[in-house]
Length: 186
Ligand SMILES: Cc1cc2nc3c(=O)[nH]c(=O)nc-3n(C[C@H](O)[C@H](O)[C@H](O)COP(=O)(O)O)c2cc1C
Image (cartoon, rainbow, N blue to C red; front, side, top):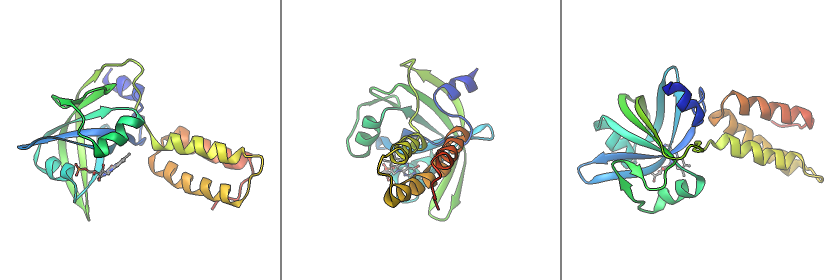
């Protein structure tokens, strides 16, 4: 049941969803755009050691991943949004996460979560995945009437992001797009 809800929000295996992750410290809530993905029955994120999120997640046992649109995600990077109980005002859904593992890999912390609960405020809520945006942009480039090397170069760059952040459907589609247009992408 919970898995179906997560899938509905976009969390199919390996697909990185860009969330507003709300962590907590003695100073209060902290909110930052952080990618979260599902793998092997757990959710995961990678946080940079220089961030507040890293500091909080290495000591706190809970956090809240907010499913938001592009505008809120970007605003969350540099604006103090209203947060109540971990929920960012305007979020379409939230995942209540328990931190069940934190391992250090160079300058990154790999955080492992189990899902304590999901609250859906907007039945149309769906998490943002960069692979989807890159796939769309690749399709625009590939379909240009005056397709040239610079368009093909962009598609190569987008494919790297799709490989990193996409699920099976985006990875398959970028390969089909490249082969359909006979593109020489590195
Ligand atoms: C869409 C988006 C996704 C991001 N994903 C991550 C991420 O997965 N891990 C990370 O450490 N930083 C990520 N960042 C950068 C952090 O959000 C940024 O460094 C932020 O300032 C950290 O805030 P904090 O110090 O309050 O934790 C992302 C930024 C954007 C815009």
